Image (cartoon, rainbow, N blue to C red; front, side, top):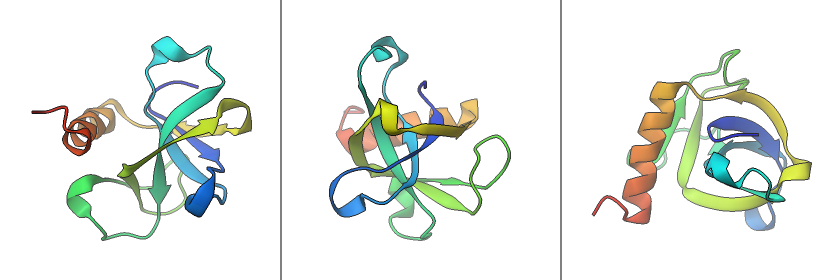
Length: 107
């Protein structure tokens, strides 16, 4: 699994049901047993300035319009993830910008 992949995972806590997530962890950390991800939701419209909207398709593996919840970053066990697709390069660029805003890395 690599950065930008869309995976199905079951995070712990309040968001613990199987759901799509986007891997945001650097590919330099591939040997680790966990992945840093952003959760994905099909409930559209909440926090649109903090979320990346994705349209379903064969590339990303999603079945319905969805949003990457950039403000919902968590870790999941790599062994419990299944890759279903990947973001396009332009979507990864937008995700990078949103992550910089949410984490304060853009100054």
